[in-house]
Length: 200
Image (tube, rainbow, N blue to C red; front, side, top):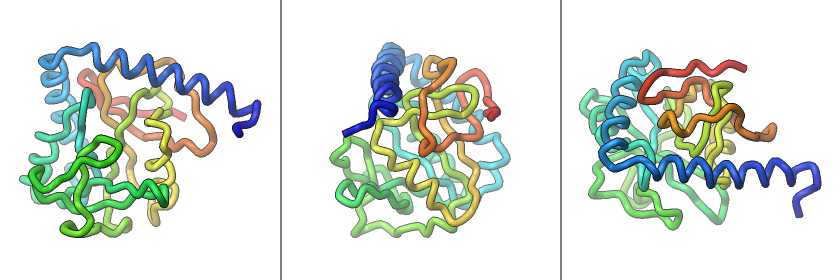
């Protein structure tokens, strides 16, 4: 059972997830496509990405910032692109090298992911930059995910410091996102309008 101290934050996160999801899904397909392209252009221009050899990203689904064209461009640039594969039983996440969209499967959570048996696992030590998904963000780098804490746990166990970036539409930004000490912050948030340098 959650403690009384934790309950207000949990409730605040629940409410914010609903609001952020509503804002994001209110964008038209055309708006998401245009904004996603602008976000991708800004991301590719960042030195953390342009200089990276191995990029950890995610395959978008639903109303998320579209990462499909971005993944293809990273591959064309000769980078190793790795995508997360989650283990719900162990509550853990690992990165596997991307081959093609045709070889991805839909996870039980609904997002596309590599198949463990046919894809190569990428050692955590090889990751040069990590791009995280999220529902809501603020300018201090606080991030609200889907509540499973896979990324928070994965980031906390990385063997080296890795630049943490996030992709978001401007409508996903809020004055303050409720977090706990276990919630990992991102360093930069890339939107269709700007690159936010997160301040502590």
